[in-house]
Amino acid sequence: MAADPTPMESEADLNRLVMESPVERDIPNAESGERLDSNNATDLNENEVDGILEPYVGMEFDSEEAVKEYYDAYATRVGFRIRVGNFHRSNRDGSINSRKFLCNKEGFRDNKQSKRGEVRRPREETREGCKAMIMARKEKSGKWVVTKLETKHCHPMWISRGKRVTIPAPSQDEKDKKIRELSAELYRANQQLAGCRKTLEMVLKEVDQHADRLTKSVQDIVKNVKQIEDKDRENL
Image (cartoon, rainbow, N blue to C red; front, side):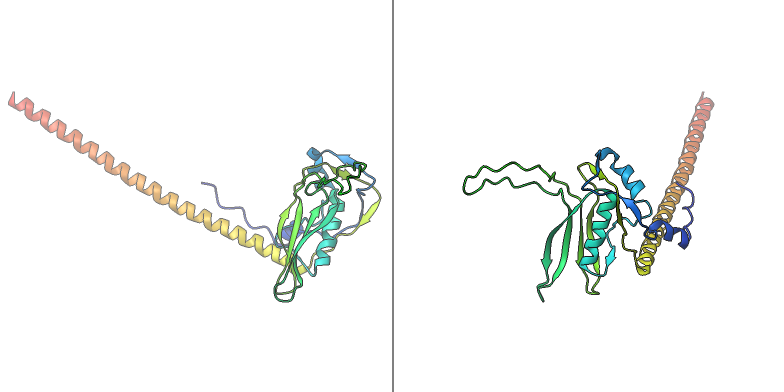
């Protein structure tokens, strides 16, 4: 078993790890940049999005438009463009209560022929079946909360130049919520570790007891055999 779990980091350290204050930097422009192989996309994310809040399930926003603005800014930083996806409406008042925002390379083009049989100039293929997306749902509190997320792309990203973007700063409540989630997760891990340790101690104790009983049984057998041999000698 492992030793005692690593001590919980201070609130300040967790706060720094969870999210940093937004900064402005010269960042990629997907329309006039260079292509980056998908194998190097992770390096781009680490370098260009370092210090910028990554999306995660449970992330909160004040409105649908705020979700769109955030994802658009995040996409520009990482090196892709977004497309507004499908939505659901409330059965009560018909208002939109959930929305998907997709990578613009999501799905595949529908190559339907013109009804008039016109020969059209083939367009460059822009969709590659990418599944990257973010989905947010409106809660009773009025906040929009991220409920589904996919961050992996199946295509090369873009490195671009010259565009300045500021990603909206997360609220203090959101930071506190993330810290509480991390603390709760650490507590659950400690509880599981304590349970495993207790179970192991019980098993080892039973093994020791069984070994003691086995040793005593062997000793009794040896003693009985010796007594039988002694009687046989006396009879001779």
